[in-house]
Image (tube, rainbow, N blue to C red; front, side, top):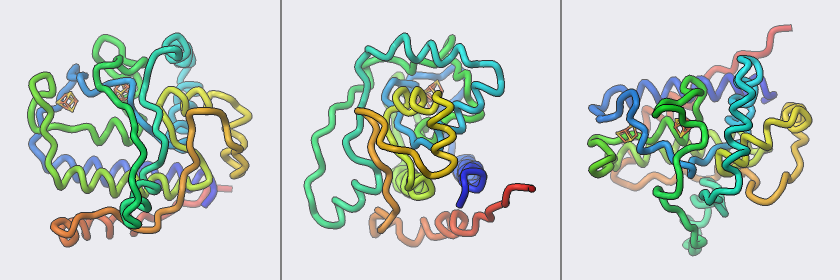
Amino acid sequence: MDLFDKINALDQIYKIYDAFIDSFELACQRYCSTCCTCNVIMTSLEGYKIANHLIENNKSELFKKIKDKFYKKRFLPKITTNKIADFCIRGKELPDEKIDSSWENCPLLINDECPIYTVRPFGCRCMVSKTNCIDKAEMDSFVLTVNNVFLQYIEHIDQQGFSGNFTDVLLFMESEDNRKKHGIKDLTNPKEGLIKNLPMTILLVPPEHKNKVKPIINSIQTIKVRHKPN
Ligand code: SF4
Ligand code: SF4
């Protein structure tokens, strides 16, 4: 798959997820931003899409907003979702990872609104709750399973790329050189903070959700890749 196909597949994945989540009664609404923390994780493919959006829509000043908060504490994952699945299947212990939702808001948040809402990464899309998070977030266990499936597929599509904190990935993708390299699958290990993506070898689905999740997996697997027009 070339980069155009991958972005196209990512857009379709987002659509499938949005349709899935529409069937739930959620407390999520505009200006509700407790979940917009500095700990969002994304892939380089998603970072590429957001960086392009900022550049093409004259919103490049938002890169500066992120750089200004770069020194702040944020979640830096040690392993990707597909690696976690691999570890779980092989009974290996997961690394200790420090994450705290009280660290900081997302550096992009403006007046409780997301300035990149239409292109926000999956890590933001999948933050949903049946109750207002100011009191207590409540996520359906099946939604958690489905979220994991989507995270695994997105990483799989971007298996030549990297994952990391939203801040680190987006600043990495601000570089035109890195965006070009991503396009020709020549992205080299960037710097501390980003981790190599992996292909999906096994889906982490608990036995009680195996049947229920099948139609969603089928929808993802039937994604049609639209090839780049000449
Ligand atoms: S996940 Fe929680 S904070 Fe985020 S929009 Fe939904 S209810 Fe609001
Ligand atoms: S990118 Fe947007 S949706 Fe995601 S955490 Fe930041 S402000 Fe919220």
